[in-house]
Length: 56
Image (cartoon, rainbow, N blue to C red):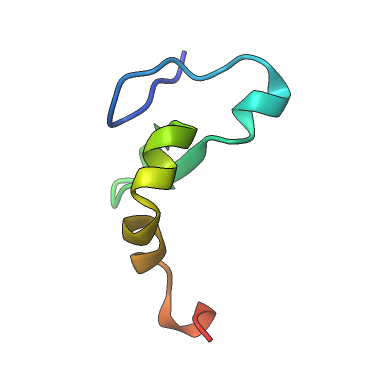
């Protein structure tokens, strides 16, 4: 079962609720998840990782 990288919350099994989770990959290709609360709290950090070409 996947858990939130920040707070440790268990990822929802319900498909609609699971869609609210944010996925990220580290440099080694490992997948990590953020629950909706942590994702909202850290949205600027997440957006900062996007390529510059997507801003505008």
